Image (cartoon, rainbow, N blue to C red; front, side):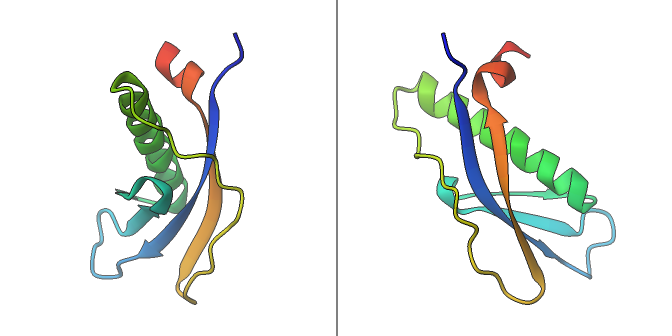
Length: 93
């Protein structure tokens, strides 16, 4: 059976007032948010969020949003990138 892989854009912004976890991540395709201590950590946290959310959708028999390969426009103080998650491998972990 082929692995289920999804790709979604994320938008990362920085809260200069938050010294411990300053990076805020928006995951528009899943109406989700998470945060991280660094940009790398924020991307990894978004992978965790996406993996858990998509597994929950599958387990609940709900539709999983189609992968999105377009990077959204951002404000000057934001960063946007695509994040891929192998849901099958995530579940095996």
